[in-house]
Amino acid sequence: MKKYSTIKRPGQEYLSAEKREKSTFEYFEAKLAKWLPADRSSSMLDLGCGRGNFLKYLRLMGYADLTGVDLSPQQANQARSAVQDARIHEMDMLDFLAGKNNCYDCISALDVIEHLDKNRVLHFLEAVLSALKPGGMLIIQTPNAASPWGMSLRYGDFTHECCFTPSNLRQLLALTGFKKIFLQDTAPIPKRPVRYISWKIFSLYFKFYNLVEMGTIGDGIYTRSFQCCALKASDSRRSQLP
Image (cartoon, rainbow, N blue to C red; front, side, top):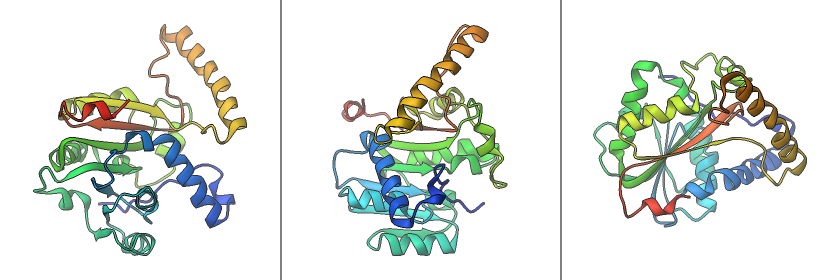
């Protein structure tokens, strides 16, 4: 299996390491925090954890039961340094998931699923569903094939094998057995007001274009990548998500 690494957000290459980390954590807070379990003792698994950015954010948020998996020895070592109390496994993530049932409250896979070929995508989703506890959630970020610029991410990394539209990924997750699915864009956050407002205005053009051509705005998600949260069935936990 390929080595995975987290995609940098546009413009971050010009920031210092400290400012880049701060920007990344602000982004996680704005976009992903609402999907995380309320219970800080929840078991959290980050697949394709890379340098440990998301694990470090989770640790700062108070989550203590942290596990990361990455195939790259270099990335795994960096994750161990970043989050010293997390369990970091240097191995294929499908091998890691094999035989695990009802183990985790939350599994994240940020910029990972696009590295799998079509034959392994459903296997991956099925393995994640099995590994989640009832009511557990899967959080995904992946390039957006429905975006006018999605192919720049799809083909910007030679190890990418496939690309999804939001509706396509929703269908795959439902087919696998996930029961409640949320989708969102990766647009600029309110802490960046000029970019945030500019994107809101700019995205109206694409909604109008789709409406004229197709009679519908489609998924309404036009950013280069998108995010998804999918819930494993459990009536007692569904109320946690908006």
